Image (cartoon, rainbow, N blue to C red; front, side):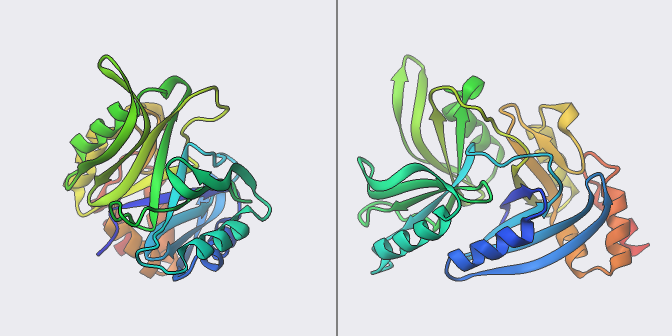
Length: 297
């Protein structure tokens, strides 16, 4: 079943290199496809799709326009219930990810886990490695996590409720935080959108980063009706609308994309890919009929 929400990573020119690095770091992982895009605003760009333990990511080498930061990171859950070597595998993964990277929280024991650490790898992507509680709720291996900082601090619960109201097959999970009247500062919350796990938290203090386009969430849509719906519900920054990209009211970047477009870009001839690229570069919200027309020539 196609993953509805796919994390999308923006690199200067290291998308394939980073994807191959992650495939070597994590077990049961592979690069699925590579597509060359020509004459984009960034010049020639390369799009890469890869899987980590069955979880799909996309990446693009799109030029030095956006820098990945810790506002969206990825929990990696090592569960002793399913893996007798969970702790050792966590430690080995940690060593590979921190090589050339930057440790944000040292690997060690914390109140919420016997072994946890947060590291920003050499490509800037942030990973939170955690040994899960075997007695706790099952969690997938990869969980994207949104951190609300600076002017968004204190809005994590509000944002989660907003996303739950928009996406189908959604539900709130666990939440831990401090409440003051009607307001809650979230230390950790998990939730599901389209049956996919995500997490959110408020990040206190001053930070030199906010949400940006470097890590976006791509929504695969079955038809134009879904594209129109998500665009209407999520887009809150008109000047950010371009090529299927939008920003919501918390400045999280989303890509609202028809699933058929992925098929076009993977299966199409160089000439078909060129026509589709030229078509979507002129659009804000994507139009499936126009994209199919460009593909068919």
